[in-house]
Amino acid sequence: AGVGSTGTGSSGAMTPSGTMRPARPGPTQGSSPLPNPLQPGTPIETLRDVEAGRPIDELDLSEDQLRQLDARLLDEARAIIQPEERALALVRVARSNIFGRDFTAAGEALVEAGQAALQISPGLVRDLRLMAVVTNSLILAEAQSSEGRPQDALLGGEEPLPSESLQGWVQALKDAQTSWDRAADLAAQMERRSYRSQTLYQVIESLSNELSLHGAFLDVESDKAEAMHGPVKAVQAQVDAGLVRGASYAQRILLPLWRDRALASVVAGAAG
Image (cartoon, rainbow, N blue to C red; front, top):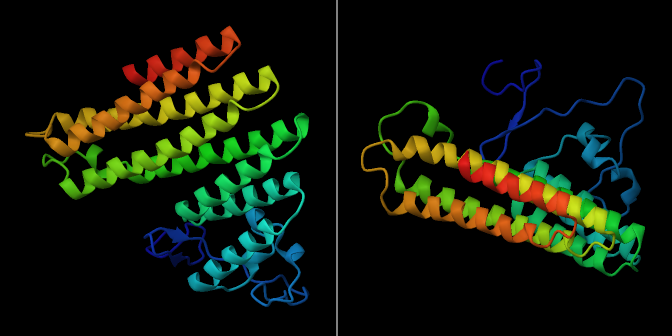
């Protein structure tokens, strides 16, 4: 596929972050015109399949209009009274923001989703809502983490990465760590021991796998001349601190089987 193509033969649009947004298919033949989601009178129910790509992807919206739509979705979700429904709606908003690579907005929506989930009476529904928030927090953390990895570090260049790239790397890791911390805190508040233990393990596995990848990049970068200067050491310190946090998450797991698996995952991440 050429530049500006999605790889499927249709053109895409460049987002402000430099990634390609897939082209939105036009309405099918014989379909009725879709309502404009930016109009105040448009029912929010018409937007319920945002994450599935229907029907909002059939509209030709600019980046500014998409931001307006995200803001409206967030306002609609916040207005829901029942906490179990509000939490679910906020998770969907966060997922839409992650897809659009608006990680700040996604994090804010997930914070509010977690707060709503904790307002639900203890029981299965509360645990399931917490699980949904944790799962999407891990998706966010991994997206933030991968955003910071300098892909050109493995392309064989002899020159060390510039300080600006390394500083951005550190910040991306800090942002991801915040998401992992939030996920672990929510997982630890699940009522059922089996859910709590397995979900905490999933948080630790996500963290360990991602930080292991960063360690591989650091190994390449450290082999370059004068690589271990201040910014690289800062990246290494952030990776090490994250693995230590992962080990502390494991201490919250009550079931020995899951706790041992979690600690093994941290060790594998440190060795990788």
